[in-house]
Image 1 (tube, rainbow, N blue to C red):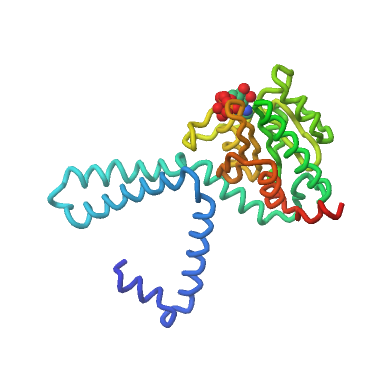
Image 2: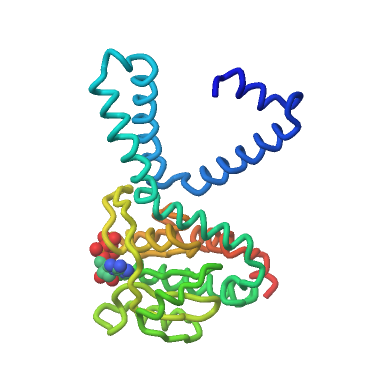
Length: 273
Ligand SMILES: Nc1ncnc2c1ncn2[C@@H]1O[C@H](COP(=O)(O)OP(=O)(O)OP(=O)(O)O)[C@@H](O)[C@H]1O
């Protein structure tokens, strides 16, 4: 379709649906960019953009003169991109479809149905325990379930279903204790499971090269809406990962504020209770 025809179709005076059309496309791209913002997908998209731009330039300007290059672009690179997109963007596509499913699911009770004061208690316990673990240089990974159920992951670990407390968390992660390895899953005010293997993120580049604990923290937050809190054994640094984005070197009060925001618990409740 040429530009003039496209423009006349988009003109709200000639087509009453043009505005609606533009609005839907704008919302779609806003939603897509919101999902991939700050993740590895941005670099992948840039790389793909460069290749597509090169294909466009070669196709329009030098199609006859650079015949080998245009053959390569048309017959190998473009089809490879079409096949490669679902593979390269698998975590983002999964997250996008899950978030669509979540927004159309009115029955799910987030945070295991815990009320505000229980969530506040969970936040306090997690912050206290991670601060102590950080001081002692003990590595830990705590994954907090939100709307997406983490039961399939929990079932591969050791189910505890115990009320959350700082001593219990410290005990679990104490070096050489039977459950210290891998991750703990928290659902509402309970520790659902320990010793849980999480999916690893492909993204290894951060302020330093991520090891498997941080990749696991990132991986589960890329594939679900869970929040990961990770304590580095090597540096003692506390990080929070949400939506594949990692905030590192947090102190206890910063972690508390971030968790309260993500779990939608106003911290004024703390003063009242
Ligand atoms: N798939 C996984 N899911 C959850 N935890 C994992 C997974 N793989 C490894 N771990 C945890 O990560 C630990 C190893 O961490 P590693 O040193 O490789 O990572 P790191 O990100 O550099 O962490 P640290 O800063 O604590 O050293 C393991 O002992 C294990 O407890």
